[in-house]
Length: 258
Image (cartoon, rainbow, N blue to C red; front, side, top):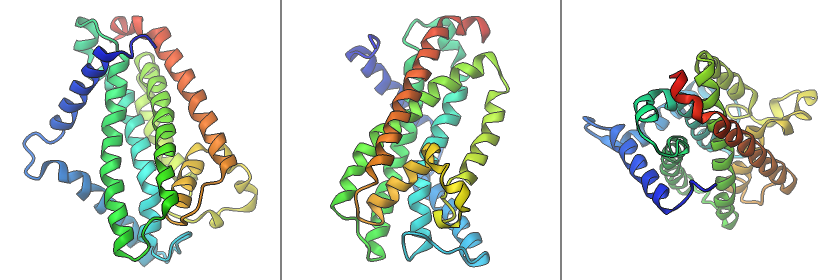
């Protein structure tokens, strides 16, 4: 990756700063929307699934904590993929007129999305202390999981951003796909709610593995299943290599299609 040098890292940091500032231009409370929006979403899910539908939690006595823990990685990954898919088209002027490593556009979106997750994670840890179940020493391993989560998201971002250049329906189809992926992952319901015949296929769902690792480290205060961790790491690396290869193979043609 010859493009990943000091100059391009500085350029990425400039793009990232502009992206974070641009989101809240004219907003009264600015970056605090990163706290308010997840809280609203999680509160609504809690109201519907715990209060109305009497959904029980899995690994924690408080459903809102159980839900929050699953939503953290989900929101980061889904936002990163959705934004990456359209970022080349949204920056068409740059792509056409300026010579720079186009990979930076994808990395900028990935880092921006995960910056917001870090804010959410800090809020979640405060919540754990507030309900009397603070995270243990194993929670530190979330840093390792986080790195491979970034790699996985970047791979999907590179792939779908490229595919969307040639097939413009990709971004629309992706939203439906992400919704189905969300429902197929035990986020709003415990894993035990899944039929036995489905559980044996869950290991092929990377978000199932990722959410499970978050809950093991942050809620159960235990080390994640190492077999599932290795499988997720292999998935992340494979997805990244396929995504970056597809992106780099076609990026010279981007300007012709946008």
